[in-house]
Image (cartoon, rainbow, N blue to C red):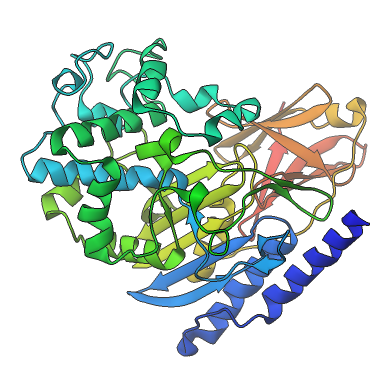
Length: 458
């Protein structure tokens, strides 16, 4: 009976996504907003989105709408005022505070850690810049937090406890000689901020960012917010499965991920980035220059189909967040979501929205149903395939077909039929084609509204 009730509630959510008047639309671009809305409804129906979306162009909000459940148990829907954790987007705020303090001559990003945390290992080799650019080599403490620790991290801890926990771990590589996404570095950056200002990290962010930008609905202690204004996090939220997941305590995530906000407040933040407010032009230029991998100083700097962007994302079971700003096109996309599992992000949805705004091909999401295939059928798809200069490899192991990316990453493929497969988190489908003798001769990969044909060469 409970499962039936939840399925009925989920249907109501999908209907509400079509009918609720929660949209801020630009009347001059109805066709665009209708496309965006249809796309997001397809994402809701395919269990890829449950939250709030805001899209702006040329300094004007052209789309702002909420989808799905804020709290299933209380039968309340998300709205455009719902509060979400922004998770690792917090890192961009921490980086901005560091640059602001540098402008105030209170520190320098070239300072060694021994100036502020003299007892930390390798403190004479680690700079503040290393902390912010993920190049410190310090072990990432969240790598040691799994689902089995979820109840432990929901309670307050002291900064000394966290400092001891981080400092006792061996380094992943020598400081400055590698890149590895690192929450520990940002945690230490928060301690540096407190050391040089004599104020809490939270007070620094409020005074230097929230108050100047009038971000009245942003703060830090998400777990203790009033239940009536915040989203409830769901590790799984489908017709078949519903599981809540409590966000980790703000004392654990701290300067690496403790901020909560709304889409409206986050738009004020991205407008500050677009207009280069709060910091000098020299500081912004430094922040937006790649330091390691695609990371600048608290931001990811890259491009999507040739469109340069500035972005950051965040993820933890129950919540996913992302903002992206395309400076040359003056386009902002903000997504805050209150469902998702370990390793999930909302970038696949962002890609589709980007394509819509830029007038490029895209696909609506589809609800897909996996079937299990025997090993001999999967093994037929193994091998190397070529599409011009692009090489694609498929292997089977443990009764699962995988696509091997050029960087060595293995993406599991899920079967819809004997020769049709899809990626779990991306809006990508693959069709293996046989020749007249029944042997696989090529694969057609469909994504972003286009087909790529790869011929089997080995």
